[in-house]
Image 1 (cartoon, rainbow, N blue to C red):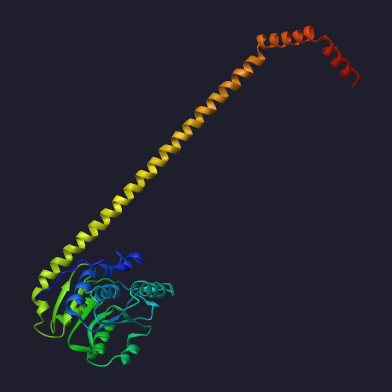
Image 2 (cartoon, rainbow, N blue to C red):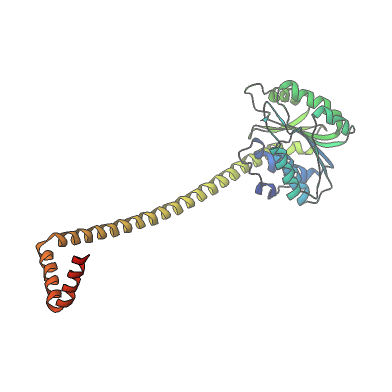
Length: 305
């Protein structure tokens, strides 16, 4: 298969930085998958903040593809993703309106089972399953939605390598690998890619894709971490410069205080010295000698008072 790699700019990152989110490591593959397959209908079960949805959407927007996207989620949460309020859906809705308003993106605030009736059988090109991650839940989601997927469709499963707690996607994924043609990525909690059509051309380059996106993730993470470190270093340098200015000002203030204290001490010493007392007496006698009338007039005035 002549698979084309793209170097996209994800516009939604201006609003939502998802470098720490589990799905972020797969968004370049998700973009390329849509760009290469050019599906007509994409449905994802479980959206949360939408890293996967926006990865699909960016490809649709950049390549002007005629694609309809459906995000099925209650946006209330569950025990694996955690429970949350309206702030998550508000963020998702804001991203859609700001960056992808011209696309055909549908938010279905329903349970996965309730949304089944909104789709005809054999109508979905790409199905992404990322809901509750227990074995029973993911098996139920796959089996109930499978009739809705086209015979040559693709199904994505997230968290296929997570074995902690009661995550059971990995267990169900092992069963699917025995029945279907699959490929998988092991980074970012694992992404399983299942092809309903046997002998799919993409399967022939599975190893190349795995290497490319795994190393690409490392480069991206290192680049972002490097940029973060560089930015932090720059801020530290600016803070150090500010601290130096503050310290210099404090030293100048201390120096001024020392000068003032020294002058005060000099004045206090002079006022208490014999020289100062003699100088004061001399000034008084000088005034009497040259201004006797004024002196005696002032003295009589003080006596009358």
